Amino acid sequence: MKRNRFTPAYKSIEDLVPYQTGKPIEELAREKGLTRIIKMASNENPMGMSKRAREAAVEAASGVYRYPDGGAWELKGRLAEKHGVSRNMIVLGNGSNEILELLAQLLLSDNGETLYAWPAFIVYRLATMAHGGKGIEVPLNSRLEHDLDAMAEAVTPETRIAFVANPNNPPGTYLPGDAIEKFMDSLPEEVLFVLDEAYFEYAEGLKGFPDGMDYILNGRQIVVTRTFSKAYGLAGMRIGYGVMPEPLAELLNKVRQPFNVNSIAQAAALAALEDEDFVRRSVALNRKEMERMTPALEDMGLSIWPSATNFLLIDLKERSGTHIYQGLLDQGVIVRSMAPYGLPETIRVTVGLPEENDLFLECLTKII
Ligand SMILES: *Cc1c(COP(=O)(O)O)cnc(C)c1O
Image 1 (cartoon, rainbow, N blue to C red):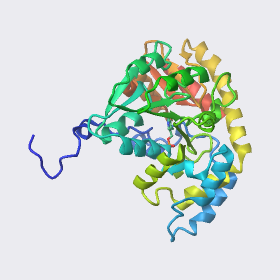
Image 2 (image 1 turned 120 degrees about the vertical axis):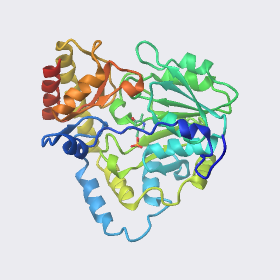
Image 3 (image 1 turned 90 degrees about the horizontal axis):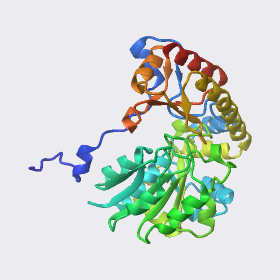
Image 4 (image 1 turned 135 degrees about the vertical axis):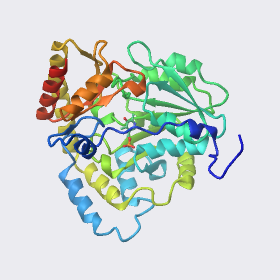
């Protein structure tokens, strides 16, 4: 085709379907004129954020006439201490999303491949396509777990990055350490392994669940990503990070924007790290509510996948997920339809506060 002034650098950009976010509360209010709306669609922390993080954010707001510290000296220092790594191994991002995006930008070119499961966190696909790469999508097995053997088989000479989320989104299940280690060992030298630990805090301590930072400390040349968006309750701040070998961090620092993480986010994240009690309470409430919701859903004849996260993937037993999603929207409850992820008979719901979960269960019962 003839090139014009809008022709993207890569054909894959034209094929890219933009990320569909969970429906914002304000949007549903506009559309349906509802006053009582709860959002259980984006795995945010229903307890909000740590009071200390909020205070730090408010205080930092008075300083926003200045540029942020582009090197994030203080926050990186605190994270380095927390994980026992050098500060030069940490790259902060505008959400951990940006780390995934930067890695694709750095390592892909026309025909470069990335490897990940499907369904998976859709950003792996988007970052790949935005940078001219080709995603090799390996189906999850019948239990919706990563098929790591099939993924290892799918590596080609063009493969540059392998993404694995542990625990995984949307199923919520996790892989034990020995499976991940076997997979990492199988990857050729030229393939970068990226372990996405967005839900780490929820899964920590579960039987066999590995801490990706241990792999880094053992000298593995991989990337581990973490975020402040989930258990830390700072999704709107957009801040996350990757821990990786220093030479790779140096390269990412060349391609990232100099001020990619704003000063309010840096201050809030620093304060959030000092309030581990908030994270502990968030995780405890999540587990308790999940244990309460599970039998209630089963009583409706539904089933769930065993979740190591703050969301439940619900098997609607041959009912349309889109239909149930719409029915819940009509009642002011926002969940996520998983049809775009190839799971048309499921919905994904973020575990909320007890009263939100009660309302969700009540509304779902009405529909079913
Ligand atoms: C929510 C989520 C992220 C985090 O995204 P941020 O950009 O840090 O908000 C990363 N990976 C997965 C699998 C997620 O579900």
